[in-house]
Amino acid sequence: MSHVLAAVAWPYANGPRHIGHVSGFGVPSDVFSRFMRMSGHDVLMVSGTDEHGTPIQVQADAEGVTPRELADRYNRVIVEDLHGLGLSYDLFTRTTTRNHYAVVQELFTGLHENGYIIAKTTLGAKSPSTGRTLPDRYIEGTCPICGYTGARGDQCDNCGNQLDPEQLIDPRSKINGETPEFVETEHFFLDLPAFAEALGKWLDTRDDWRPNVLKFSRNLLEDLQPRAITRDLEWGVPIPLDDWRDRNDKRIYVWFDAVIGYLSASIEWARRSGEPDAWRKWWQDSDALGYYFMGKDNIVFHSVIWPGLLLGYSGEGDKGGKPGSLGALNLPTEVVSSEYLTMEGRKFSSSRKVVIYVRDFLERYDADALRYFIAAAGPESNDTDFTWAEFVRRNNDELVAGWGNLVNRCVSMAAKNFGAIPEPGELTDEDRAVLDTARAGFASVGALLGKHRQKAAIGEAMRVVAEANKYLSDQAPWKLKDEASKPRMGTILHVALQVISDCNTLLTPFLPHSAQKVHELLGGTGVHAPMPSIVEVEDLDGGPAYPVLTGDYTVGATWESVPIKTGISLAAPKPVFKKLDPSVIEEELERLGS
Image (tube, rainbow, N blue to C red):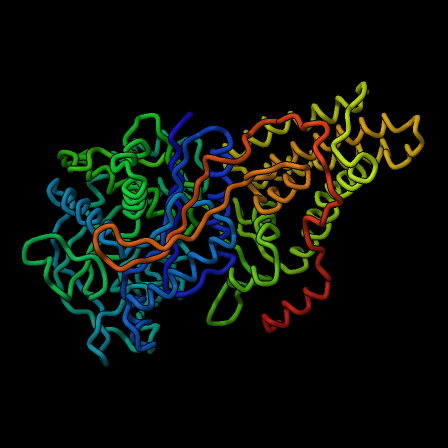
């Protein structure tokens, strides 16, 4: 058994999340975490809403509310949406807790004491009409490196390079189109070049990462520059240094405090569990594993900047130093990045209404239907297009006709003819072959899940389902109606139900809601696929209360074939999945304005 950290990217709390977001950070991390728990590992899955930064300040001003009120609203929306998807967080929290502030300030202090945070005078962008600071992401212009005309002030999404807004050619404000003024201001910078050698040596050991992630990360090391760690803004974590901590015009930059959330959430979880030091098993044990899940636009923060922070706090960069009061901290085992999900051939865009929010999706369709699409056809290693026609096809042909119909037919026949799971007689070669196929799935599907090849893994699981359907068609138990043939019918149905039970376990990480239903249709009791709960909690250090996602995941199925019990009563089943009328394709395209 290993301690496995599943560190999931923090959704920004300036609005509801759409299905493109959860295809990158949400569903893949949950599939992996569920599989690892079922395999006997001690998993800690943490994240929360990212709530600081000027974009939230700007939006709050526009709506006439405080930044905290805006963050409160969308924190709750996002918590409810992720709960609806069944994402099994041990703790989904937020960055506005006092615990988070304390951990962020501790890492800042440790890095500063080790010499990795330096003060510099730089240029800051301000709005000529309002005099307020413009956030980097609210400045657009032409990238000076690749010439892309839609580059942002912090990053070019075309070439992936990090930028500062004054580097842009023809910069303009996204808020009102005006040209920003650049004025001198003093800030603190993370000395990233001081980690280049240590990061290079570490990346050289990461030969099992996805090739695109590793190549991109190595390329970034060729031109590391000091990166601003504070900003001229009012909404964020105070700077924990004399003459700075009480200033209202300077705060720690949101990117710095958000990545530290993985650690602060782990510490909060430990404190809430009654074992305040329990987090150390995932962050300091040499055999602990840490997997970070995000979309490809976040690779740089997780493969270079966050490891740099960890190295610096642990005293392992060019300048040496000593670990801070929390001690030396583990670097990531793997950065698991997904590509982009597009929609009907277009980029997701809330402003252009090319979007479907998770909440709206779950009001009309089952959570497992979306989870299945993401796992089977999502942007694991290539940009992928979500189309309503493909969603309906996969739901109807694969979930309903392939898997759901197999369950329904076998349980119905067994319930009608035996009222229970029938006793098996002597097995034929065909019986043993399909049972062997199902049992072998635990090794083949498990190996793929362990390597983050979820698309291939669910394909392998559905191949076993297809073998079970073929077995049932070949054996045709519905033809064995006379008394002399009934024992053979019982054997076939017993074998089929055993294979269904095994297939259900193979599909549980992907389809936890329907897996619980199938478990119960097979006469099972208790929790098969544990689900998260929304719990209202008090801030541990006296701040405002807030909702978290958490759960008890020590219960449920294990990753193995478990013999079904003869004689367990069966009732006529209800369909596991809903068949969708093809007319929903036109309805959804009309909503998109297509």
